[in-house]
Length: 564
Image 1 (cartoon, helix red, strand yellow):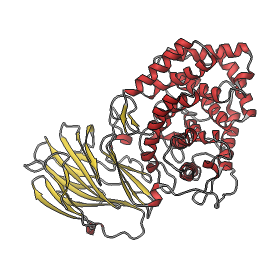
Image 2 (cartoon, one colour):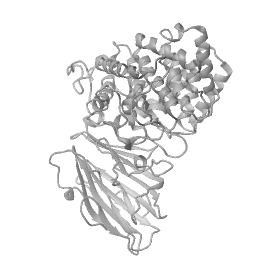
Image 3 (cartoon, rainbow, N blue to C red):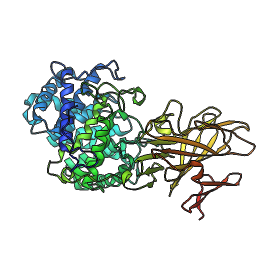
Image 4 (cartoon, one colour):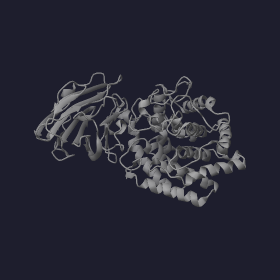
């Protein structure tokens, strides 16, 4: 991908300016054009993989997600091509929007794109085409959504149709229904679950916040904007801390192939004035993520986004991932709706949280503890409250970071009798430098996990109950990566090599502890000297950190007390 020369005066951290975002958008749009059908209604991107929705739906996805990019770029020439495809698509080529069908997702992108480009696209269509397009989109008003972020797709479609005066009663009902549904999943402090359960991931930013805030902003509804914008601003307090100094977003959750769609809530805060971040920090974080992926093979030699994280990687895909799925990354170009003279584009870049100082951030809603170190710019997420409805390595591991990815060998896991399952996770609290949770194992055992953190050092403590005496325990640490050093040392009840420590449950509930570290520092202090740990009871530890802090991990599940 050809980009302009870097500007290290305006952007000392990334070198990227608005011109880089524009050039990236232009290159991505140009790259997909050869794969449009003759009538431009479908975009069949190359590759053997199809989603579970089939080739026709995948082609619609290619149209909708790249239309979104053209709309955010406000590219009049490209939009003329998409207008031609729209006319053909609503004339019988596109699949209908039905209950829980993928076209409902794509309808939201199309409706939003039409709304923000109305003078350039919609208003120039023949009346007959507009009527057919409104009728096709209209099915979204009554289509049943999956009970998750999908509830917001009818809201987005209805917002556009309502602005046209199309079926105002049905549009209002669709908007009210969707906004009422997400209230069930708002858990406070700027965080939603993605439907029932405790599924916390980037869908908070690129769906649960994005659509309601955009709806309120476009509708000029100050009441809703104060509500949803206030939640977004609070979310960004935490969200900004999920990016490493190299620009990498946290490698956690599903749909990771959307990559720099992670920047959408950053831009959204600036666009609506609902953000705690300065303009220079906003652009630094967003441009850092774009640069991170472009520098690491996210686009191939044809400038097409690949199905993966850096380059192609089937491990981060889901059944709904088709050839064009990565183009939800288009949401990351939301900043282009800001004029070129907006301060988010003209301010000098400022360092992000991971660069400014070491930090331990407690996030109560998902029961996460974020651990970042400014010396190497790494961010680590200690997960004591997020899981999917099934075992999923991107939800249920003990920890994630901006430089590692879940491994097939089950990094950051506790094996009980050979089983690494961690289900029915119950948060037990998160505080200043610690987090705790309880979970079930595959055999029905119960485990209480506690992590205590200072700097880059972690002490992980496990209490294993409801398993037979003699049950084998195995503890793993961080996956090995080229750019960082992973360490694992036994402390209580464990022994063995650093790649995996083992122990055995005795006659009492098993107590196990290990020191863990992931660092990119060239010469860190010896891990065994980083903390003093004393066993003071059958299920009790006293932990002394070098800074003088003394904490007690008590026998009550989740109990962590500062005692000195």
